[in-house]
Length: 125
Image (tube, rainbow, N blue to C red; front, side, top):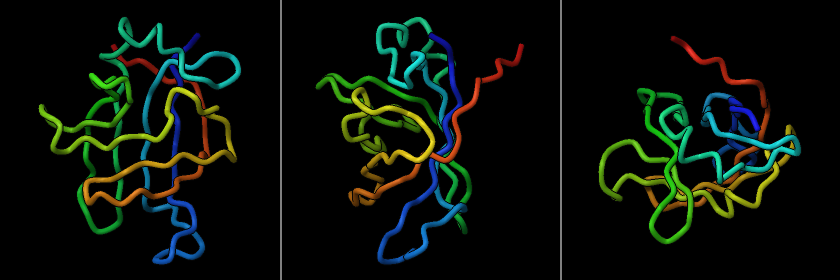
């Protein structure tokens, strides 16, 4: 298991028929050798499991990867559930380049994102 930095970019949608590299997420999570979430490692690594949401025309948002009471996973930017962005079947995905992930964003819309990069996360002292 190791911490990986994963970059997601907006896949094709009606508003972005070619997708968009200026709309997406970068997050850090513990992944196993096959690219699956190592959820048993998350409790000891959760402080390092950060997320940055980047969206053209809006300031970046910074938060963390959380495991919710209902067993699902989400990106969260502030205490409470109002801003949580659930990730569909996060614990079942393979985070490898070319795969897709669905995230329900702040506005309640589920959007597809393509995994464009997976690399070792660099811890800063």
